[in-house]
Image (cartoon, rainbow, N blue to C red; front, side, top):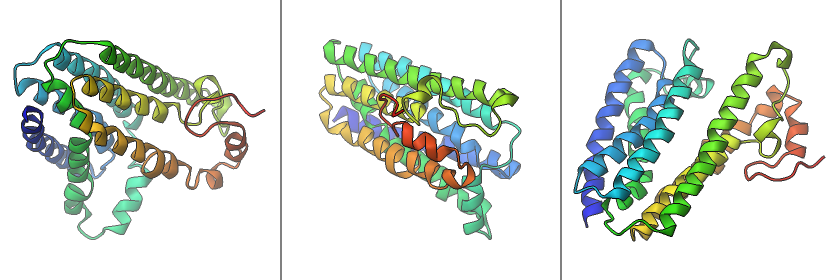
Length: 256
């Protein structure tokens, strides 16, 4: 299978990018940079898949969509984390894995994310290998991607603007997209990846559904909603009322 062969070629590329980023993190003594690496890995994967064979319109469509989504997210995360101490998530991991965390982080964090991104990128490989004409499933995938980008980028922008206003200190963001879902950025990511899968499905790569399923699990049950809300009620008591009134993930009317 062409898509399987191209998929295998991406793994060393992603591992090399992870290793280089790990070296930077060791010099900075801060592994938060791995957040910025995450979307970049998918850009690298998409370009690798398109370059692996005679790329048709669908392959370049995927490169464009992944590139726009990934570049926007990488720039935002780099800007958000610039000049800050290591994220508390990674501080906790560091404490649990001392001594020699600097070395352990190569495989515990950077290598793990590279392999995870490689598995999740399966729909990109399947779509890039397809040579059938673009059709309605591709259009549906682009539509889902666009909805996701609006929620993800819009949610990030609204939250950043909210935090910049000193009058909002200590308050919970419950305006704009955040009025309808407590996690518009995660919901946006969900839509983006199911959009990629629809494009892969249009190419006949139905079996690549493992990619969006894993991403959905991460967003809903592992590193997304569950991790963020595990102790936020203790740190921000007002958040409990926000939880009561607002849908957790999928947007919906407010429960006033």
